[in-house]
Image 1 (cartoon, rainbow, N blue to C red):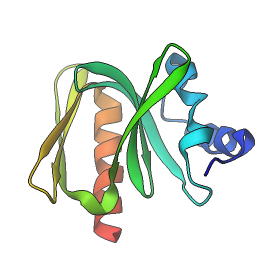
Image 2: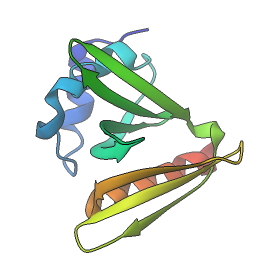
Image 3: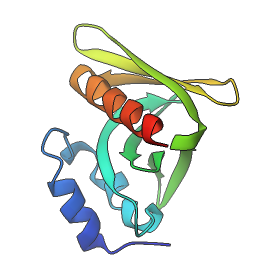
Length: 130
């Protein structure tokens, strides 16, 4: 169920630590994907499964969103499906490594170093509370 664009805009405005200007096309699709009771905690641009995605961490899931022509392509990972999360950082960039309860390992690469550390901490906090 979609949420109002105004609600998404307010949530994004409350995220001063994240760069939002680089992914306006993907951000425009967020209202169509978010649930009414879902809260955005952070977002970044990153490589996931060999493509550039907008990675949005909410209190319920991690949403991967990319634009392809006029449509938005999504993937997601529910917080309750995450077993572990860690980040590795280099000079400017880092990566987030997620272990699922199904035994899979997912990598989110080419994340700005600051974003990788912030999102890893947010995901860690959310999986503890689930």
